[in-house]
Length: 257
Image: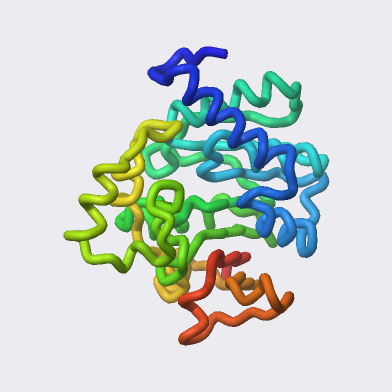
């Protein structure tokens, strides 16, 4: 298994394994997203956009579980290459992967559902309102935008757990965190490394998201805040102070105002 881009075989294998787990297993970091979709929405017969699809695992999962036509887009050429490799390996029809920046080159087509699974926290702050405005314009009447992300106050928002297994590490002073991260920095399956990814995080939380979607002409239809407490007591939706510091993932469904 080799890449046409500047990725060595080990990174390609790592990327394929990661995406394949998201595709084939219900027990992955996207299990909450999958359960949320299954509970509240029916994608059958719908036109779907997976925005920031990464290596395509979630895109292919939706295509496998629903009779829908789906397009996955991403700005990382390595991610799109691996997504296409995974699609070819499993012979998934009705799925297209595209390398595209919607701010510079908007998509003209309209969609019933647009998904941003663990993507919004990686978008440049100055792009957030333009992107959500663009996505709102791409919704069909009655369409839904689904957003999931680890809020900045939460224990795993730093995305550094694999090398710095300290919850809430984003609150460490820079003079402590930066040397630790630089020493343990790793290349990612994509066009960045872990240090670069961390520095690009926009510190997204629910209050910030509300301001963004309001400017984009969107409203919240449904919100689920999953916290560490949910491992003990199912069904609780604790998202106020001080419990918001325990939230591991926010899942929000949006509609046009």
